[in-house]
Image (cartoon, rainbow, N blue to C red; front, top):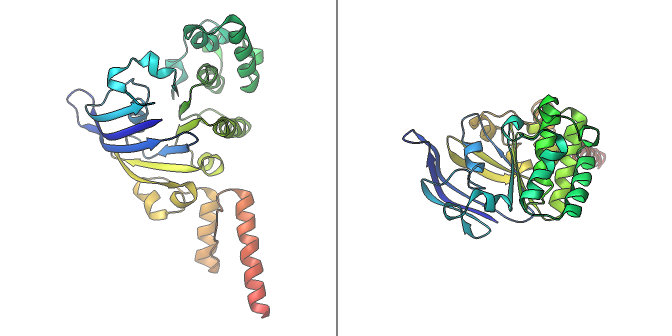
Length: 281
C-alpha cells in the first residue's frame, strides 16, 4: 500500500528532518510510530498523502509516485487525521464538516446520508450534528476530524496523536474502533506518545529518532526493551514496569505477552504454577 524508499526531507535549506527512511505498510497493518519530539514523525506521515514531497528518495502509495500525483487523488486512499483538529475543521456545522469529503468525492445523496448517520453514531457525535464544530471541546473536535476522514472509507488511515484530549472511555472506544477498521483490512498508522494506548491496542511499533528508524517490531518486544526505550526517551508501559520490578526484586521473570492486563495475569499464573510444581517435585 505504502512504500517509502530511502526518503530524505528537509524544509527549504534547513537541516535534514528525515534521513534515509525505509518503510513499507501493507493491508491489515496496525502500527504505531513513536519517538521523542522532533524525531520527524509528523513530517513522515505527511509524505503518505503527498502533503510533503521527498527531497531525495521515493514514496509510493498504491503504486503511485507521490511526486507525480495530486494530494486530492492520494487522499482518496490515505486519510490523515491531524494532531490539531483546528487545522482540519472549517465547516459551519458538524454534519457539513463530516459530509464534505463525501460530496467532494461525488458520492450519491443517499450514500452521503447513510454514511454520515453511521459515522456520527459510531463516533458518539449524533447530538452535535448541528453544532458549530469550533465551539466543541478539544476531544469532541478531534472526533469530528476523525469522522470526516473515516466516513469516506480510505484504505489507509493515519492518526496523529489521536488520544490527546480523550478520556479513558473515549480511548477505549477509539482503540476498539481501530481494531474493527483493521479487521476490515485497512492499514492503520498511529503517531503517538501514549505508550499505554499502544500497549493495549496496537500490534506493531516503529521507533523514530533524529529522523531515522531505529527499530520496528511487535509491541511486546519494543515496549519491553528498556535500553531501546531509553534511547528514544520513552517510558515503558505500567505493566512492563511491574514486570521489571518483579524480576528485579523477586527474580520472577514473566514470559509471553504481558502488556495487556489479561495477558499479564495469564503470564503470572503460568509462572506461579510452574514454580509451585517444581518445588513440590
